[in-house]
Length: 248
Image 1 (cartoon, rainbow, N blue to C red):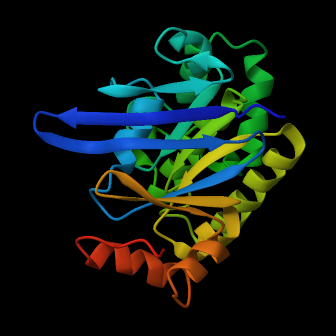
Image 2: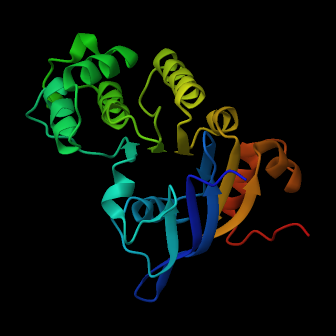
Image 3: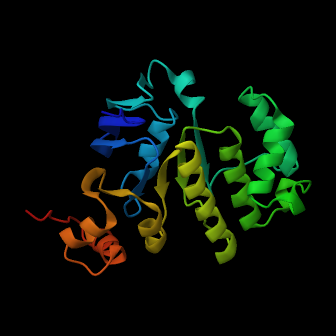
């Protein structure tokens, strides 16, 4: 039996009397793209922050590559990276300088080749010498993706990876992610508010509602389970209802 790349068991986070994440358990298999869905306030961001070691869980466990994150944080995070449209990069550095900083922080070798490769993959040549504060929102999104790809991670957390991108570049990014998964066995936790994108990209999906995991399965299975026409209708149902009873 193949061991999961990531195993989350009864993960819980409380802030005072508020429970942001409530005993959530799931796994990501090698080479799998797992979609993470839920309305605003469902606990997605807090979950990702705990997976990155930024927020300490109240209880529960996170195991990556067979290692407990709480006791092997550095070893785990060396093999993980993260991209989000909400990440801030040093604004006074050029795109290339920012990538060099990331490479040195991770202690990477062959930095020139790695930077050239990721710039080419993400079609960033035309703005690689541009100062970061002058980037468009789409260019900034590609820079945060480049930062994530640069370290050649085994596990990648992607929060709205195609936000702000035009349709052509967004299509190329999705194709690149699929190719990286195919060629290197990259595992991905993927969040997006684009339901068509989630259906296209995700092998399985987990739904969070008020901090709890309330549905898990393929997009097709989840749609059928809740008797809806598509994933967007399921999402709207979660977002609009204060509580969604699970079908028996």
